[in-house]
Amino acid sequence: MDMEAVRREFWRLDRADGALRTDRITTREDILARWHWRLEDTLAAAGKDSRKSGVGRHSHDISGKGKVIPWNDHVQPLEKRFRYAPMPIEWFDNDIARAVLFPLDPEHLLLESLIARHLAGYTGRPTPGELFDWLTLGMTDDRQRDLMAELLTDVREHDYPQLRRKDAISAWHIARAVHDCGLQRGALSRWLNQFAVRPDGWAGVVPGGEG
Image (cartoon, rainbow, N blue to C red):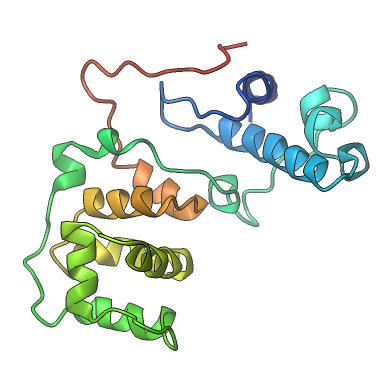
């Protein structure tokens, strides 16, 4: 972990009121800096002093004062622990992300299983065929987005690759659904970002400057 990079990103976020940078794939340092900035902001909104919680600008991580405790990736990788969005959808417009590896499963057995596990009891939950259409053709209303967000928030990490292996679904389809829902789930963003490729001519922005 490059703690100086964490501090630079924290102060950039502070200047930019938390605006995302889109010049490169999200790094570990970006994720940790965003966690500090977001939690400090949340505590301030609740009228609490972040100094007492050891987060934000007064923490050892950001202030550089005191002992920095290394993140223990053996317990849970940082990239999976914290909330952040995947790269912009344009980064998934490439052959690898758009590849459909297997033919359509007419029974949509994996989707049927995911619906049963993660949407049981929800009113208006989709059929497996409808869920497939939401993923591959796009969603049209907030009800669909809410149900998709609930499913993708709850689905287990080992099922992410199965979406590509058990049906005619691409990483691009999943990334589009995640963006359409406004979902920020660390493990899912980490998995998706392995398919992200900087588009030719991409003019990424760094709100607040590099620091």
